[in-house]
Image (cartoon, rainbow over all chains, first blue to last red; front, side, top):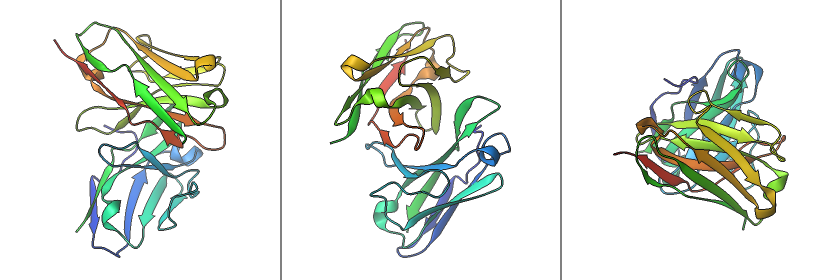
Length: 110
Length: 118
């Protein structure tokens, strides 16, 4: 059971917009930042969003993040076949003194 | 090219020990904090441990505290994860990732696989 809650799956057709939610608590997202990572099997995990809504250089602006209260979200606009991957949110948890991750969301491009 | 490369994984019997390494290239690892994160087969990412730049500030997940030890050799641009009293539920791909105060876990390695089985 992950501390952060994500939907197990999401899907869309090429060009569509897909949004993934990440629900936490005041111990984590409510008092810290949200991070988003992309995992493609056989490759190194990739940071997509840091500090709620910041994109590292090289990440397309099709990826955007936001935070409201104890929840965060990742939006992928203009969905492309190469976006098919697993997506994880993460945040620092003050009470546990540890980083916590969501259970992951598998995005399928139909 | 900036990259992290993990090594040291393998098949180990329950109760055994293993040491993982995380080597950096293309940048100076001593300027970064380093995390270990693992992913069990068919499961999600789980944070394991983090070490600061000089090794003076270390934290662990409850599930590994007392069994795993993170350390670093800045002269060798490498961070280690010494794992002991290994259990079947430690079976996972282990990733290392770097951090600064500005941005956490911005570069990851491709992982090394640890299988604990008799």
